[in-house]
Length: 248
Length: 317
Image (cartoon, rainbow over the protein chains, first blue to last red):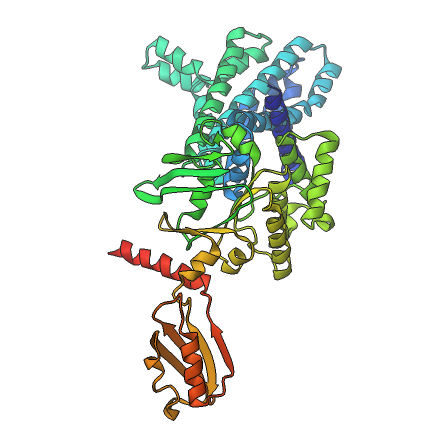
């Protein structure tokens, strides 16, 4: 256990150092914040809504994440393969679990940092009105979990290839499908021909309903379980892929 | 002790390594030789646990690399081919990361990192980012990583690749020194390196072991072992060499004339007993003024060529 924590911590430290040691972190954070501001104030019309909450901000996050998170996750394993450091990493006395988890947690932490930098929105809405801070907190929790789910998909696709572009495209496509199956217009078009239970099963796989209920301030155990199992499954697949791809 | 037990690796239908077994004892420096694509790196990757073998296993100091992989890997120092290292990290940062995974922390970590930086001639670049380093420095950074934890078993894939002659010399004397109390395997295709540091040589070709012996013994089997080379003034028409092939024990005479000097190679019938005395008295009898006279002890590269090209032919048939 001791070794597990130590190695995972070592990997997280290295990865975070890698993010902030390169322009990647700063470019990502700036673009993320600009996009969030654009969607919240221009597209949603935050001021015109006249509501003291952050729905205008949270509801766009699945789309902002869609392109930005695969851009972070695409290099996780593909880069290691390309530079040959994967060989170094896998011959050190550390397990795949430690490596997969360490890399995932580092990337997640990085995105959570970017997410927390949207705090001026909270200040703005508190200044303008009297928002329910509990709802805002659960909205952030949902957004962080949503980011984790995107990342776990990206980490898995990154382990499939040494080519970062392929990894990026694969994870955008998978995330897009998972987002779309829960998007109201898509649900409506499916429900015209499919039985209602099938629609619910399909929509249940999507990120959107789970994070949307958290944006409304409802922290349901089932939603937490959904994100936890999504992340666990993707990281497990990630580990299995690495274990098997070592053969070629 | 490092033990390869019937290591076999298939890539699809291609057999990259075919039933390779050998053991290396403490105090030995094993040179692992072979032409390109002979299966050297694949074997090494199986020994270090990076590639799972199709069949067979490797045992490192009593720990099976498949069954107790972590215990085996923690005793190994490994320098992979092309010396990979994280390009975005500084030299110190990278070595500290490896030290942490190897279980060192605090003062012990700093002490070990500081020591390998000194030993591998890296002080001038210790805070430099690895992507900005030259090939030679990168090689030494990765080498430093492999000896950081003072491993009992050291496995290196082309350790002197990309180094200049002085650095090669330094790294070789370091390996030779460490070889006294460690078990070392290094793969290379530089034969002078093998003669300089290896106590034993394993040659593989097409995934199979074709030779396993000390460099000295292998030289005795080289095609040029026991060949007598001498040079005398004169040319081919002078008849100086006319009866040389009549001398007892001489198989074949191969003269080469240039600028009024005859360079002659005499191939003996029995390489173990070259007819040195016979040739000398023959030359004295002719009154030739001998410029140089030498009995070849056999060259490793000749032996290497002999064993690695003959198996190629075998496979083509």
